[in-house]
Image (cartoon, rainbow, N blue to C red; front, side, top):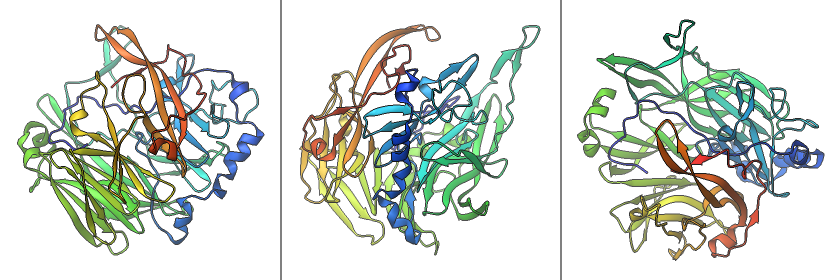
Amino acid sequence: MKKGNILVCLITVLAVLAGCGKDSPKEFEIGKEQGKAIQTEKEQKTTDSQQENGELRMLTDDTLHASYGTEQGWYYFNDQYEIKDDDDRLPAIMYVDYQTGRGMYLCNKLNCKHNSYDCNAVLPKEIEDEKVLFGQGEYLYIATSDYDSSGSMSSGQMFIGEGEDGEIQSFEKEPCIPAIYRMKLDGTEREKVMDLESGTVLEGVFLGDGDNLYAIRKKVKSESKGANTYDTGYDKFLVKVDLKNKKIEKVLELDEEEEILGCAGRNIVTGTRDYGKKVTTEEKHSDDDLYKQADYVIKSIDLDSKESVALKTLKEKNIHQEKVKGIHIYISKDKSNKIEVINFLTKETKIIKTAAPLSVDAVIQDKQGTDILYCVGYDSYGNDDKGWDYYLVNTKTGKIINGKLKNDENTPVDIVAQTSEKLLVNSNYKNVTEYVPWVGVNQTVIGEMEYSLISKDDYINNKVNYKKIKMIGMSNTNNKKEVK
């Protein structure tokens, strides 16, 4: 959701979705039949077929770019529930098999304990920084890079560790060279296929055309003023990553704050905050009026001709939300009883009227190919203690129904991943209270998360008909995820 101001953070850490703990490796290893099912993923009927003529498709998802869903299962990192081996933390790739209803390590080694770098699921030791998980065709990919600090401000100096005499020492980490790893969908044949340009960072969005990958790469410079340090992104490009020939090609120059919202055909949709003038990172952090006066410009750009067409300009002082699905952009605003729908290829626009301002938070496509918008009222945010309602908007008929599928906390079930006919959801969770020493308070955290499959038909028609997934480690209350 876009807001008219930005919270200033001293240190930003990317946390990825929680996932697993220890369990019986024999019970949950990928067996021959399961591995075979994963390998035949390339034969499934999905939107991959549209890429035969080079059409673009978003490869990363909305789950902090840390998971990848297919017709047969869901891949994700388990950073929150890390395996511990001596002093090392060993994050791994997990897989949820929809057919068996089980979570497992993405490892096909017999009797593997999944607690060392010899395990196929455990990530290589050199992948220590920001990482993105996605897939295309018959391959699963991991892209790794230094953390993207552009646009941030830090105050003072951070010290980590002590010297031999107990004195505090500063820590200067070796820069990470961006790299791309590739493996088969069963986790085998993993290899680093390409290093990217040293001194650059990657943003967490990846596109694909069936053969090549497209990434956003940029450089970051730091400037200190007094006790504060400001990081600014520059030389930012959408680049084509040709893995076959190990080449990087600049495709499109992007503004420092420009983000890719979606794509279709050979067009991408971007959103950019426009201040009307050039401003520094320091000014962005010190002058709130900049955001109140800024616009948010949504454009469609043809990657081949480089033709750019402005589709919509929104005021940043108002809260707004954009979701792209296929060739459509869905735009909602906190002070408007309507949802605007823009076909970014034909530039046609239509309006769906609503009884109250609704935020479009997700898009579900039913069997007939109609987009169903998952919406929450703008007045619902911040009502965690009371729960809130959600609504499903049929974009073809304009009909709006109240969603009824909620958990024990009276909040809507979370959509995690989609197939052509099913949804993977967080259907329930249990809260526990624990004392957090470093802040000196008790906090409510999620002690156990329940994952389930439900057909899209049942979800859209408010039928409680879940198939629970047996996730590894989800009942271990020693592994907790903080409630937001």
